Length: 343
View 1 (cartoon, rainbow, N blue to C red):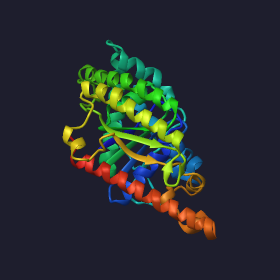
View 2 (cartoon, helix red, strand yellow; view 1 turned 180 degrees about the horizontal axis):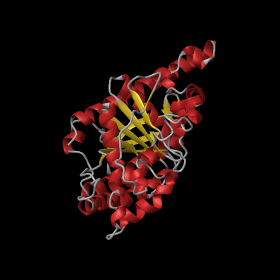
View 3 (cartoon, rainbow, N blue to C red; view 1 turned 90 degrees about the vertical axis):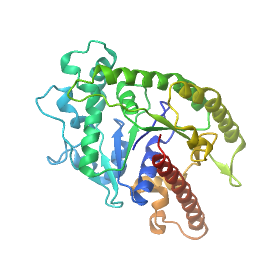
């Protein structure tokens, strides 16, 4: 199953949640591929840590990334796209990474023209299906169960492409007015992308890399990065959460329903996905996040020595760590249940 955490609004913790969810699915025995499609390469840096620079210099690995993986199609080389061994986490053997590239956006103009032109040049016919071909080959090569795309905050051609070749999309949000605006935008943009993907399936059916027949479905919403008091979100956050959930129910879901972008009714009525479509409310990680980024593991995988506090502060950190562990176990189990019942 391919999952994309998508919201064109920045600062909603797409990278952190992609990493944490992928890690937890891997802990539960699934082989997970994280795909870094953000030119900032934050996910790649998180996984590679001190080996980041060396990876892009060493002859054996420097071309094993998302951009160079499709370069033969974009540069019209007489070479086929090939699968390759991806980076395997040294701390979680079931977790793999397809690294990003800082110059990934160089592919945007060509891809945009190919996807939006009814008469794309013959040399560009292979571009829209190239990312799908690479992912297919890497999934087979590395025996992957789940693919999770981490993308940049934008509405460009690459994000459109990766969204369209996914099975499930999850919308991360923050409890603020800008996330509410983003929900309204997504209610028009994502159905438009879905309709265009159907057109591309026909337009590029005869290319060397056909555009796949996939139909992304809404997995749900994540509300993240808020402060809690007495075990509950502070009132201003709660009020914004309620506004977002209302917009999802009244505007987003009806738009998706009209375009066959929802899972089967049973997924909601049987409680696989909450009735308000919110898969999880994830509070701010606060000081645990810095520790997580420094070590290269999720907050719930930090050891006591890595947290590096003592006494009462350590006890508080341990409690938070366990809370986040339970939260991500629950989220991962929901994803597993969705895959098992995917319709």
